[in-house]
Image (cartoon, rainbow, N blue to C red; front, side, top):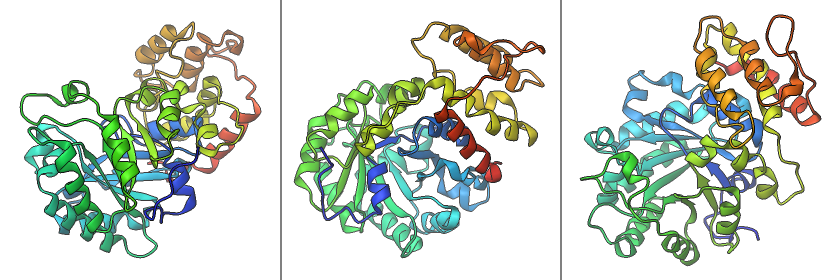
Length: 376
């Protein structure tokens, strides 16, 4: 069933479609190498950067985090901050960098984020959130990236069924039309960020009810989504704009993303094989190494590609042990791949011999070569 149409659906059609399934911004995980690998599985899903501190970006401490390969698109940037002027300046810096969306983080519960007065603690200050979002929208300008927000159900003692609708009124009043709701409260006192991902109970029902009730916002759901089947089930009622998947997509990208494009488009598209996705990374890795990068920077995000398959443990062990060594290159990747796909073979230099790519992998690899210009 298609997503419910609302007056909020003013984004380009391609972005509306991509939001049906997105991969959550995750600190230290969804960097440009991770996103590039995820794009080998899905051409359609919306990908997000890690959260970037707007103040650090404006000070010049994090500009490199805006670097990305055009092949990562559609891509959204997530910013953290609570100063409207600083956020506006950060949006101005990112405006021409090709992001489809710039998202304000109002959900991170970490102590470090709270000390900077942004993230989930802003759930208590909807007026400030609205001011920030207005400034971001103005800075993005006509034709610029869409400004969106990502929040929790609430924090601490708040009763989400009472406070969240009021909070969303402020967000919508600022001009935002797309919101991602993590379907858990955040306990800012007493729980760690890790515990805040699992201990507060999920309430998918509340998010679904809000999505059905509001014509002024397109609402996506995040939190506790563990599989592509779960995404399909959540989209089935037709009230959500999309579903955002976090750690499940990172730890088992094949299970979540290999069949994502068929779900997103409603077309009969073949699922991408993980070995094809791995092989399609080779030109990207060669370009990364040629610029002085290290193999581990890329392959650390690829460890879950064969989750549940025979040889997966050897794949992870070879990459974990050997990709960190000086001089590690594509031959290391091929040795690891041979542990899962024995018919890859082993070359005369001790690495796996170059295998023949399927049609899917050949197309992905061609896109990889075309997209290496923005590697940093």
